[in-house]
Image 1 (cartoon, one colour):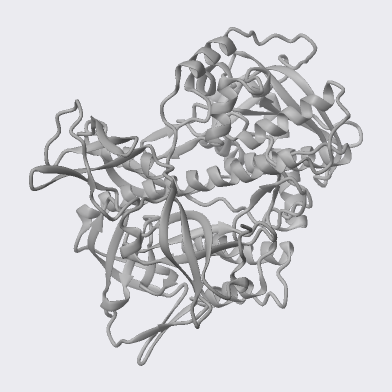
Image 2 (cartoon, rainbow, N blue to C red):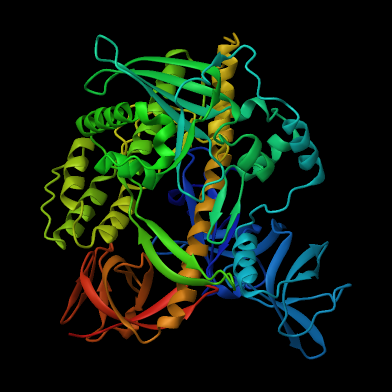
Length: 637
């Protein structure tokens, strides 16, 4: 039967959807209306959820209550999506059961003893074989337990199969030759990344200005498509993963490390096949022309962000910069031109100061928290990649070539109003008016730079602006103030970029029979959006778990922070200097009861009101690593 939108449920009807389990025991069954594409969800009570696992496909009956809320009942399992479970072995009488990750399931499951000898208290990975759950391996190391929990919670792919290994070996036998390519090996090309980055897929070169004042920026990107054949086992695996996942303590690469960190990585002194987008930039940073072509490059130097920032900020030339010393003034020039162009266009840098977790070298356990501020070199590379992505998007649209574009809709008026309320807590006057424009957002961004509490402010601003997504229909990227945008610059790490590369290469090789609105592209976009969302949730879960583990050693200590969210169950507070958030439970707040405003911008009590952005002093009360939860208590002045 056709799925229903919420407004069409007038009686109990049956739908099929995916279960999402909440650690408190209840769940929601979600589906999408086939006619309108509108997502919907219905509440499923704890007693109904207990027999199922997060991700299960269920057939349920849906009914609408008097408040127009949807409730699900009579669940029947249609398909179990999980093949493996992480959990702790427990004993019930003479039988063993598995107590699963609470984010995945709330009920204990019967455990077959199998060939692996396990006992109560063991932490294991168990596999479904038909309807039987059998332990396959023990996970004894505490660090490994935290990583395995998150990996299996989100169904991430970790192991590499035999057919993929064979495809990797085949790919590494292909040489990086320059046949049919522009030879750029003599140009002063550099990569700029973090010191621990291994999958280096972008490099830049800046050539001096011509008599008209126009300089040339060459952004060269690893030509992954030349080595990953469409439809191969390697390609199908990359499609399933959709993105590399950066967990604290481990990276799950989209492509195996033999490729991502070696054969396709733009290592210094090594010939590498690339796709290069060459841009002519006038003195104001406007793009005068775009040329796209296959190339062969040889990186002259691998720079860190700190290396480049030392030159950009203070003119210091570290030894690592010597091979490209003559290019450095032009590197600064391109940075300045792109900055001026970006400020004229509007928008904001949506990146944030990176949360830093330090690990003990001996035990591998997390030992400290902090943030790493973005440097001028981060901004330079971000601008170079944005202008390259924008130029390639326009190049494809002008030629009628379908591709996965990246769009970001303007925020709804109520979200703009929420941002104004939040800004007021920082003594900032936003005054956006009825609609927020990219330039108005940029002007607001200027107000918050360097301000006390900037990290919390940016955290809320990103959430209120909402996420970007992939789609076959090109359009505005509001946050970047780009009329057209896509991802071209990271094909080692993102499958969407690999699809863009294939589209570009097909056009360069003469293909012209592209199908406008190709439905396959939209299917690819939907799949990538789903996998990218899972990867983001996994990264956040792992970060929160590590933060909870570190803060478990800080129980009883007091910190200052800012309210970044207001939820029906309490206040979410971001701790200054840590980048970590904790919960002040609603029931722990004095002078209750409290009522949450519908827009969740204020928590109103009889004697006190809490608002987004409000500074608070809190104490660490308890932590739960499995749930990534830090419980805080308000410290009254």
